[in-house]
Image (cartoon, rainbow, N blue to C red; front, side, top):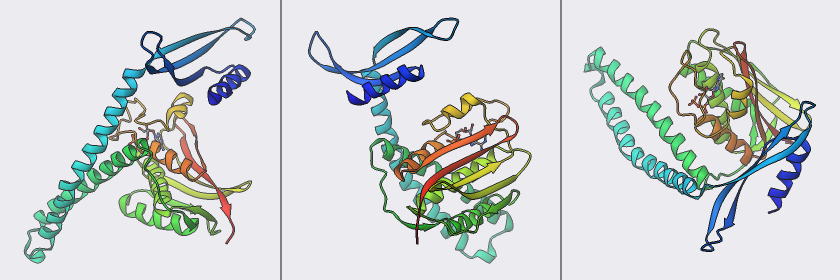
Length: 291
Ligand code: ADP
């Protein structure tokens, strides 16, 4: 019960809505069931809290439903991965088969098919990551990682994927962090891909490293559509996407959730600064380590 008390005391202090999930024993049959406890402060004209309205909602069925959904996502992404790998292999065989004799239009089709397959592969990998996170199985080894090398590799990759974008690197200090370089590169690439995706006009993207106290911050800045204050609050939630008909793009709202989980596993912090119509800066901070 300790986290509940801590959360409640903090809500009393800040006057923010209190929300926590707990299991309660049902009186009639002694069965434990999950409940969502909420307390909302009611304030007078002087903005003082007069009293709190508290509710406890039985969410046992909803929780079970979520567990079944997570299990399904896990199985489905595994099942999808196998035929996809074989498709990719066959495409490679076709493209290497009598390469010179293939009519140009067929070569073009193969390239298009490969692009679509890569997109599908990224989506399935994200789905797999989400299900691993839910099962508490997203684990990996740590090593000393040079951020300059990591950023250069990411930007090189990004230049191939987005030839129309203009990437500016502001770094060069070879800061070292304790990290899993593949996972950290996944975060940087996600920030970069989103920066390009959500900037329909200005395609400048700045990737910067800077020191903040004992931490090093890696940030990716774009000059795109930006985010409102409420959107910023929810952006790292699982499956959250901004409902915006004008700038609607494809995606499942998994990328930033996975990024937040990866950075939290690294004992770091993740965040965003943004203004609607001006652009966004997504960043993470990790403790600096010495060489
Ligand atoms: P996806 O892009 O696949 O929907 P993400 O988790 O990467 O999922 O992003 C969640 C949502 O955050 C996106 O749907 C988009 O609305 C918003 N978003 C992410 N990056 C940016 C950005 N650089 N500028 C504006 N909006 C962004």
